[in-house]
Image (tube, rainbow, N blue to C red):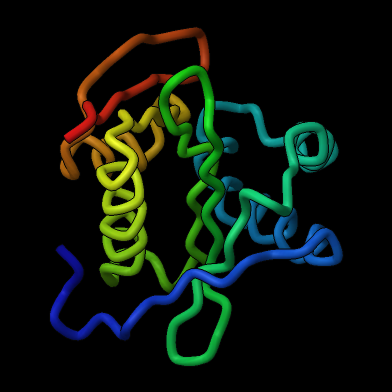
Length: 151
């Protein structure tokens, strides 16, 4: 649940022209976790994001009239893939991510689809997703995958 002092969060459709802003936010948000495991490479991060970028499935996270992050949810093999959820550093830990998840959960529930997500090993995101009901699914060299069953 979002904290009581969390501003209302809305999700606003992104456009292709937003790519540079989005990739910069992703690199900024991932930097600490990637540095911790010795894998920070902004060029590689940019290339990986570009390869899977779909403006159609990307929405800005807006609160207090400011873009504080973004979320990407894609259909994938009879489920939804929470491909990205990033909140700007400095705005994390304020319930904004939880508010975004609540909206994504409503969408998944309305479609009766499970929701899958992956998180970088050692990232705080692992605890975040587990705290919000995701269950361990699989583990790879760099990532851990979770699933929230359909409701």
